[in-house]
Picture 1 (cartoon, rainbow, N blue to C red):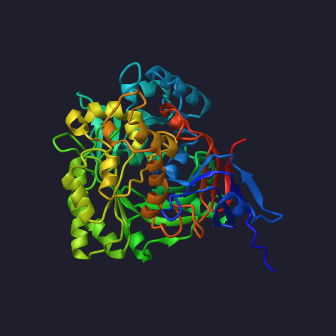
Picture 2: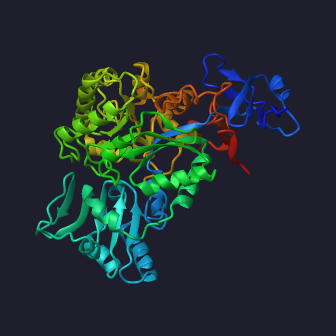
Picture 3: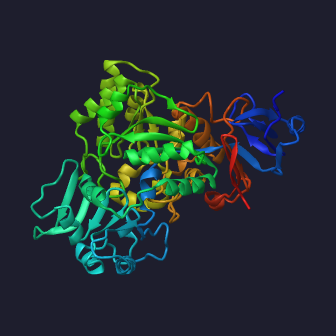
Length: 536
């Protein structure tokens, strides 16, 4: 007779189950991948067999595993050999000189002609001592014999002369569609490339790690240490997708992953997705396709977002957007549309409205990434609801660069920013994504705290009336996130039959000081029944 005793019991806890039928409990039992039972400590402990691991959490809060539904992890771990110049990761990087010193040191280690990539933080020019980014000429001096470029977020880079020469960019090269090649007043190249203009450099760079499996696994383990069990990762290449497949086949995924496949500005064309003929959801508990991804406007952190009345960059014109969204919609493939500025948001909504008019699909759950950060007006909320779309906000933008962002958009556009309480009150899920790890680390607890405290990293309050509670934030990153991922029947709550995704917090959020919530430690993480992190 098979052994039906649980392999794991977590007991003597305060379970925030996120299940309305039983909001709180004391213990749960796990059998293989799933939750077997939830209830009082005594009745659950009675299920234990000789091989059951019983973990007494001594009154700690236990939640479903946390999710982050917008990351670029597979893309960014290819930068594991990049020169680290991000001040959000290395506080010692306080000046252009510090950046140049690091690049100079790397150039001395490499043979001539070998590419050098430096990875910076978004809006870093506002925080460096010189209040600017390094110039092409400075990068030439730091790495005179090596093609070199520095990214400051995903939307802007500065390249040196050898790098520009290597990709055949000259002062006479026209701007590519959806990108800008910046020039000095003299007409000479400044070295600054924005949006799609960066791609030719990125695709030529041979410095990136070719086998990215280890980098992905390392980054996923870091996410697991923060209680995360689900990520929605944006894919740009088949190599990234294959790396995830390989890790899954080897049992090396400590986090369950939904792949959002970019189909514009990508090595994966739209037709390739359509020719597969699948409908969502497709895949296993551990790895599945979560939708298609496209970006309408430039990045907020590069000051290139498509706000009306401001100089923004539109990367996809309305005609191409309409055709792409309609093709995905008719095929049953969910669209995840990057739209930051209000003009871009209106373009996204129009494309979705036209697709829904062509063929109503009330439960396809299209997403508009970054919608809800700024200018999510009553009219846009009504249009979003009618189109059956989901707003996906990004609390780290509020937390890390909110002060610089407010100066960029101006006080009127910044009013009511990140209105999670309003979004929740109107019946939307409030699951959010970090846009990490290229900018900052993946950390859903930090992001929840940002929306609870409503203060930037510099201590500036913004729209405090839109604060949510910590428990509401947990619900956003568990139950709401499961619904966004088409997993409401499988995940997001601590209930019998649900997948065993579990987070045990090491301090009580109800008694923790507000300013300490962002660093709330994790005691234990369980993903699909397996312990993926245990605090020493």
